[in-house]
Amino acid sequence: MTKRMFQLAALALVWIMSGSLPAAEVAPATPAKRAYVLPLREDIMPSLVYVVRRGVKEAMEAKADLLILDMDTNGGRVDVTEEIIGILSRFPGQTVTYVNKKAFSAGAFISFATGKIYMAPQSVIGAAAPVMASPTGGVQELGGTMEIKATSAISALVRANAEKHGHNPEVADAMVKKTKELKLDDKVINEKGQILTLTNQEAERNYGQPAKPLLSAGTVENLDALLKLLGYSSVQVKRIEPSGAEKVATWINAISSVLLIIGIAGIYIEFKTPGFGLPGIIGITAFAIYFFGGYVAGLTGLEWVALFVVGIALVVLELFFFPGTMVLGLAGFGFVLVSLVMALVDVYPGMPTLPTLPDLKPGLNTVALAGVVSALCLALFGRFLPQTGMYQQLVSQGTSGTAADARLQATQQRQLGTIGVVLTPLHPGGKARFGDEILDVVSQGDPIESGRTVRIIGHRGFEAIVETA
Image (cartoon, rainbow, N blue to C red):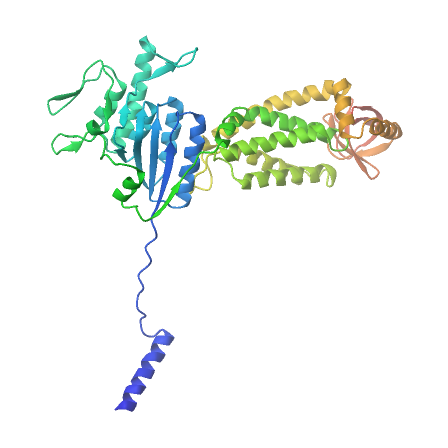
């Protein structure tokens, strides 16, 4: 009997090891919850957009379940508020506003764009009527048709977000419109001619059938207590902290087109002058600042900087090592163009691989403007700059001064009468090979096809003037 039991046990062991018997199912581990706290503790201005964007993207990448807005603000710009609301709508998890002291004006608008609103003791929310910045500082009330239009537009925006997230749109309307009377359960909450502002106790009172809080889901002592209430007391909590770089990036992105123009002009002049000097340094610095602004704003990633560098490298290979191939130059130009556009495209985790046209619009507009202005500037540079003292000074600073000028003049004198072959069609500028040397050349106006034989008859700046031989 003992031998028989041993045989059965051994057989069962073999079956289990070979997979013949079903193994015990192991329940998958429940992923740990994550919560992110995003501070809105200042006026709603452009630099805050970058903090919100960075925080939302970090929360999405971490697959966070909860995003809390820690709010204490006097309000701010409506256009910035709309942008922040759009960014918050990208977050797929639960969103909560915690009014830590006050949520006035734009702060109230943003609160209605979250799933729930909680308030601290002695906190207030409301006073959301539109006002206009005064030329002497501070604010002043709108009047007439402008006030009617602004109030109507903002009221619609706030009502739409209130309806989307389950808040009472009548409460939102009363915070914006002076003409709105708010009455619930035969009690006047806000009289006509007044703008609704609620304390935490007023906002959490129940009205209607079935009874429902007017606005706030409850008064909570602090953020830790709120996290505990929501079931996040023992989970990972990440607090997003603003950095001074966001305010710097606001100014950088405001002049992004100018930076591109400076960068293009600097690199162009550097290619047209011997050696490496001031124009190249200025151009590279301008491009670096351009990408830095997009990076701090939470737009671009390092992958687009790398693509830009690869594009420039391909253009250099085309110009100096493999002229006439066209493939390297076109690919490099395409990489540079894509990287400059994508540096201003707002891409979120989980978005489709290819951005839509509205996503590309800011980058396309900036690059198109910079391209047109750069083309005009470079045309003027090519015609007038070589004859100016400033151009000679730039050349001297980049090429060891007087000695380099003497060498350049001697080289150009020696090139006179040299016969070469056109590598790229001249319309009127292009490239030609003279022995082992490839030069930038320009015809006297008439186009010259590639493969034609030409003779150097003079120079204009650093370009050789040629005619058919």
